[in-house]
Image (cartoon, rainbow, N blue to C red; front, side, top):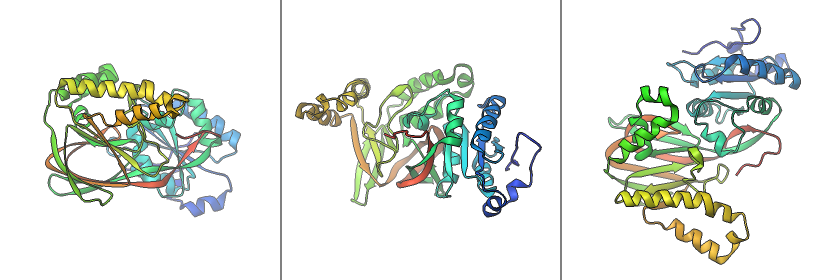
Length: 359
């Protein structure tokens, strides 16, 4: 169910029914909409900040849409576009951001980020300031638009049903999906992200590897045996862990990594590899050391670490021998037996701070 838009003044239930062209014929001023998760957002503080910067920018009164358990944001984002919003802001966690982006994608409107919650992986990867509400709201009204890539997914369920999704950060099978499926909700409520530590420990005890066939950019079917397979539009996880060191949100391709540990020692090598990449090699690339032949050989050697396999492309089709858990931008979506991922280069417009450089 789509909730009607809210405003700081009297409710304007008629706004949601106004087509975009009609909304703009009534006023030349821009319109912003905020789709917010009421559980994760400090609504009074957010409203106060929005009201301040909205007046400074001379924009029309902002529209407000609260997500619900039944609809985590798609209906609200569509209502915002129908009401003529030029910019739709996602105020919540990674799930809210992804769902709003799916709707805004290709609409001509821009997506703004008002990070809340513990993840905010898109904002982290785009190097936006976190826990700075006024800065984020200022960007909503005074920022500039940039085109970024968005991943598009079709998954095939166990029963053959197909569903379409968008993804901004990463989607995958294996450890991360099983970790999310194994996370105990009651523990997450008590200790937040530490609940994932418990889930990871229980997921690592699952030594089963997936057997799959994949086709990358139409190069033909190949076999793959791995514990985890991740397709990423961005490269950084929580705590600054750089899983996909070459991934950027504006390069027109996605990055794929297959984790193939054969033992606990293999997991240790993967952990060391990720720390090495994050702490040393990435920094080396920005120095003269990273430009030397020796530096490049070190980086190339790290890419060939046997427990890890990296690939890049614009489209990949994966079919599993046995259905497995799948996750999209940190949200578990259940068991699937196949998926197709492709990159829509520059397909999403995001509002960024003036002069902000995307990596």
